[in-house]
Amino acid sequence: MNTFRKITLAAMFALTASTGFAESERHVEDYDFSFEGLFGAFDQNQLQRGLQIYTEICAACHGLEHVAFRTLHDEGGPALPEDQMRAYAEFYEVFDETLFDGEGDFRPATPADKFPRSAMATAPDLSLMAKARAGFEGPYGTGLAQLFKGMGGAEYIASLMAGYAEPPACAPDDFDGYYNTAFASGGYPEECKDHGHNTVPGSWISMPPPILGGDLDFADGHANDVHHMSEDVAAFLMWTAEPKMMARKQAGLTGVIFLTLLSVLLYLTNKRLWAPHKYGRKND
Image (cartoon, rainbow, N blue to C red; front, side, top):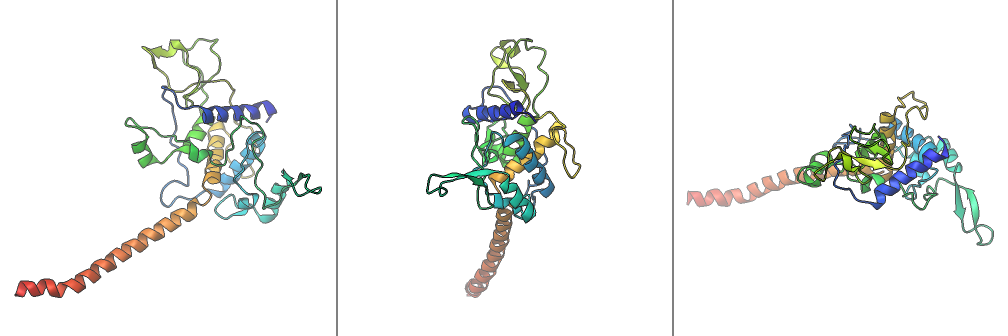
């Protein structure tokens, strides 16, 4: 992957971070992620593929400053073997202010360190990107759609990556940018409007697609087309945004079970305590 395409990915996320959604509708695909639902869990192989995509495509511009290298070894995450996790950390350099009598210098990262910050001022950090984006919208606002489908941050990221398409027939050939069905904040030709309303979803952005398909080969032999690579990196960014999701789900389920049992016990206790008084009054 050349540097120019890495920079385009940074520019794309910068645009999504700095602007809101315009009037244009957008197409966000409802991906079937393994972590969705009450009993869903992250797919370890998918997270490892997403980590590879981030490392080889995204990391040149984007940081993960809230993610420690040691978490790559966590069971609920990519679960890299400890030796691989340590070797991966050493691939990066971090600035240590304690070196050279306080003057500081770069050194290889250790598991306790966190990923470096974004290398470009216009490239947002991706640590919490999947939680910062809402992918699903409904005719009565985002509330109902998100109630049934969730926030959709991972779906939005995947749809944006895979959302490049041939321009519709209404667009002039010389219109600047690349047509993307999931990006609603870019340029839009007047020829594709009807009485001021956009007639096609998405908009035009100024960078070429960051993922073309076949960019990388995976150790597990998984498909490396645009759709699957977009899904994999989106799942990885969902994990970076909420690495304790599995623990949270387990705690929530445990809490529901406990409260249900407590409610039953309280009902039976209440019934036993008040039953003599209730039926005694009826006998009187």
